[in-house]
Image (cartoon, rainbow, N blue to C red; front, side):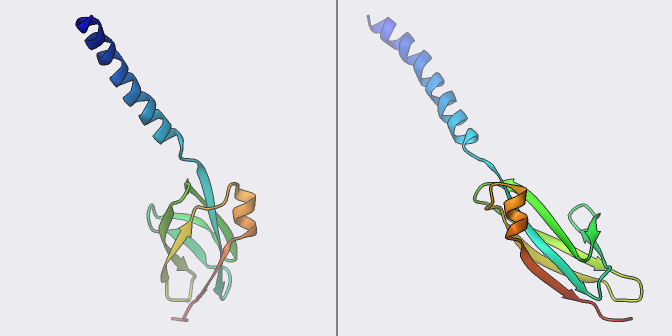
Length: 116
């Protein structure tokens, strides 16, 4: 009887741990955050400095996705010929259930560029 109890316990504990890990990792949901990025003057290229990708031209509404309850620090560079490049760091909160909801509640970011 004691051996049977030990074998059952050896099978149940790892199974319980697996179920708990699945529950914890399965709880995160993809959420969205957005920003309306404008510049003075308009027409500046928006570059995400994390990967040096151009994500749009001002004015632009940009959406980021992430896990529920998280915030993301995003560093952007705005570039326009004849103007000094400007770097801005913003925080995007992933709190909207859809891209459309995030766009409807986008944070306004305005960057003023100085002439060279």
